[in-house]
Image 1 (cartoon, rainbow, N blue to C red):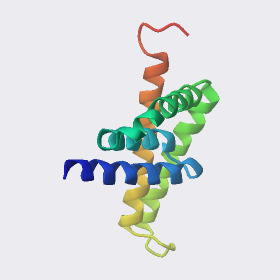
Image 2: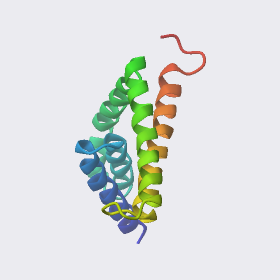
Image 3: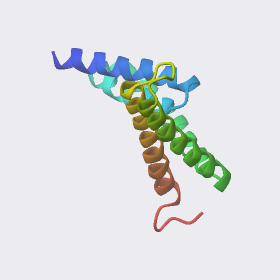
Length: 129
C-alpha cells in the first residue's frame, strides 16, 4: 500500500512539474520531488534523480544570478498576490472569486518562498560569491 501511495504521489508531482516547466512555477523542483518519491517505490526511477537534481540546482542558481532576475521574480510574485486579491474582491471579472484568488495568492507566496530559499542557498551566510 505504501508503495502505491509513493508511486501515485510521485507521478502526480512529476505531471504537475512537467506542466510547470512551460507555465510559471517551480517545475523542475516538483519533477525532482516526484522522482524522489517514486524512486522509493520503484528503484528504476532512482537513475533519473541525480540528473534532474543537477538541472534543478542549475535553475536555482540561475534564478538568483543577478539583481535583475531577483527583482523580476519578486515583482512576479507580488503581481500574483495582487491579482489574487483583485480576483477575490472584484466578482465581475471572468473566473473571479476567492477560489481563483486564493490559488493566485498561494502561487505568489510559493514563488517568493522558493526565491528566498534559492537566494539563501546560493548566497547564504558564509558563502563566497
